[in-house]
Length: 526
Image 1 (tube, rainbow, N blue to C red):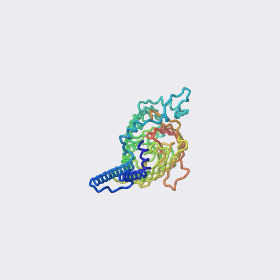
Image 2 (cartoon, rainbow, N blue to C red; image 1 turned 45 degrees about the horizontal axis):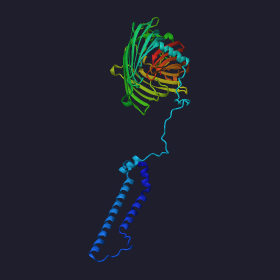
Image 3 (cartoon, rainbow, N blue to C red; image 1 turned 30 degrees about the vertical axis):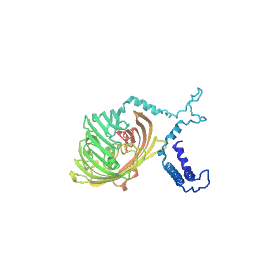
């Protein structure tokens, strides 16, 4: 009998055992002192010494037997109590019990289970349901074939050959080749991206560029670029940003660089400047910016920072374009000037990714004040707000975005290149950079992003998107003087390849009042 059966049995019959043992001890004691068969009562023997000795001896023997049997009964009761109160794992069978368990035979009426071979006509064993592979759409088949031609993969890395084509209203047509090397880690996260390019432009000749992105974590990024053209243009910049340093507590960003850009244009100040007011110039710029802050309440961040910028305006080199000094001789900032400003920003962000978001929202308030420290010449205050909202559809391939931006600068000395402006890839995608400028600007962007194909290249998911959009924007001297007729609309579409969560390659095509514009860049414009 196993301990699981034996112990409950003892517990149920413990009282009976104790009573029985006690009764057995009393009966034994009574038997020990009971009279012999020859007499029902004790008779006093003769008063001889022999009879007395015999009687006393018998009495002592019988009392000794009684004491022994009482002692045995007490030991039985004590042992029974220990067995009843002991836990199951402490039960130890006696040698006799082990022998009984060993020699006991199984019940012949109980058959042990036996395995039998399945008959030949038995049905097949049911299998777990297999995930059905969805057939590829026409667009996915097209992009898959394009990817086979343009990409080379090995291990967890991808090498892509891309065309470099753009039509900037300021620089004109540019074309060339842009090979991209993507290096991922064992977890399929992109860690390094190198994108050298060779392009040709009629104004600046041949240009060689090297871009490098390093992603130490999903929330940090190091970016560096160097570029040199056959004529005039050259650039060297570096930026490091970590949005979740010290276990997501701190934010840090630092950037700096030097640039010469001979494609710059300026049309004057105000919402109604004409194309005939165009003035060209070469901008030589050196800048440095640093900011740090604290992340709090899960979705909030506050930062403080400083920036330094030195701009020198040089002669125009664009044919058939007037020099800026001739068209706008009284502009502030035509001489080399320094701008030194302290800034403060308050950010609220619930987006799922800062680079490739698909849902959530963000809002930011920013302000800065220039100072005369470090040789600063500018004197103004700037402030503004920006908000973005992402609306995912029930179909995960569709996301709608609304973005709004308001900015205003006021002060006695604002260089023309520090004025809030609209035009370019980040604001109005049908106009060149800084096409309209004034003390204030207001911009609205509405875009609908559609994933038309999704491919897995060496385990790295790449989404091909098309995004029709509408841009609206204007500039004004003061907010009460803003007029509805001055709002410039732009209609267009964007074509993108998004490798979440790190990189987006984008081509933006917009059509405005002054014609089309094409911009090529990295990451979403907003």
